Length: 152
Image (cartoon, rainbow, N blue to C red; front, top):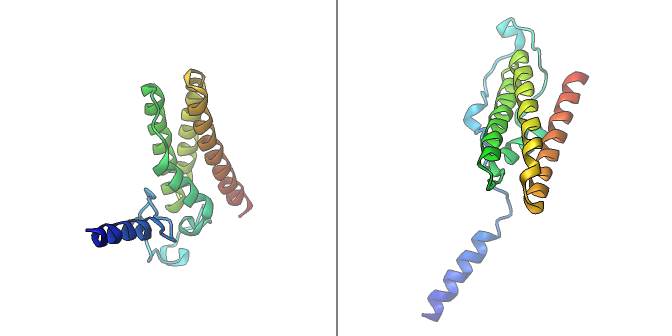
């Protein structure tokens, strides 16, 4: 019995000490088309020149979307869902080189962001700090992506 207990603990310890973080990104590998072809093949001028699959900031946004916490305030949770959809649409639009879709997603994100800022007043201090950390990280990553798009 001691031997079985020892091996059970050993398995739990080794499996919990993973060296690589699992990617719970809502953008799966199937989302990305490996054979998109070049712009000259399609005869289309690329409006957004960024590789979203290899972009660290886009990965961070995906991870934040998947790990966003739930709060006691149901109105806040509904607005967080809208915010997450806006962010997913933003990443999809960038990957699809859809400039108008990207701009719509940014406007939707900003609208949800403002509503969440108003709803933060009703949170306790701990929840407010957690929410603020997520929102700051999201805004920072979007700003970096937008700056890199403007630079291209």
